[in-house]
Image 1 (cartoon, rainbow, N blue to C red):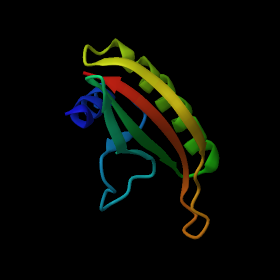
Image 2: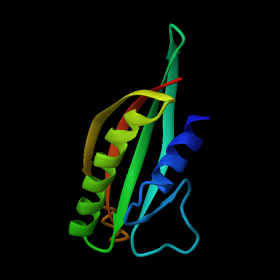
Image 3: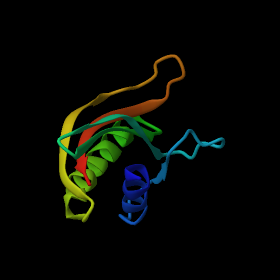
Length: 112
């Protein structure tokens, strides 16, 4: 399961914040939230789209976390199960109603 591969890889990457696959009940001051938002299969080649939210106490901290996760995710190409990682987009995703500072990065991962 590619979600498990990505989660384990991120957990082992010495990130400056904890990685979750669902909203934590008690939210730390900074954290990453990963979600597989889609996928497909063409000519026996799997592609999955991952959304990673970088949550911080300030917009600047969320932006720093976003830069960190982009570098780590693009390096996931070193895993045996992954043949390509593309950054589709990244952007400020702050929730103005709750004042939750976050960035969101969207990756397309080609995998076996």
